[in-house]
Length: 214
Figure 1 (cartoon, rainbow, N blue to C red):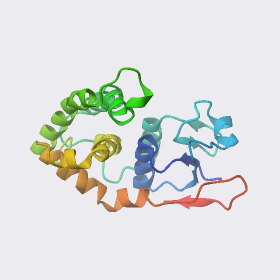
Figure 2: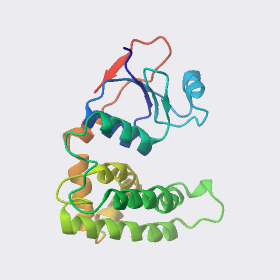
Figure 3: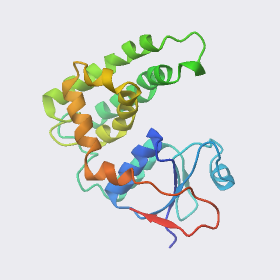
């Protein structure tokens, strides 16, 4: 049976969190690393959204939402029980991720890419985004991770976006009061899993020898 195909872009936070779940589950996929400025025609054929990740299953089913890719992978294998938080509920995890993907992401984009928007004040959006940082910091300070003493689905769904936010102005982020969040970020980024999914692969072209991961 043909392995699933995963179209990805190393630095995209949505693709990043999909890879985290795929690697964690140990699901063997053919990785096709793309550049978003030069998307291969096959990616567009599979998904008109033209974004990553795009997962093409062996039966031709296409999954082009990052959270759905994560769920698909972890339903195959969830060795550390990411989908079963030690504290809180699955519904609370979903709510937190929705805030990340909507309110926080909107402020993140306007802080990072102000020139893409009209009449935007980046520091205003950084300040607004801090509400979410403060919530995460409080959760981590109480439990070590977002939903207990062990990492969960929510930690890995959110961390690529916090990483992106922190790297906009790392000197500023490192001097904020969010000490628990800073520690959590460093622990996750230095984990073997995260370092594995951030390995660099050559840009994929049609006809290339396939690269299988993890």
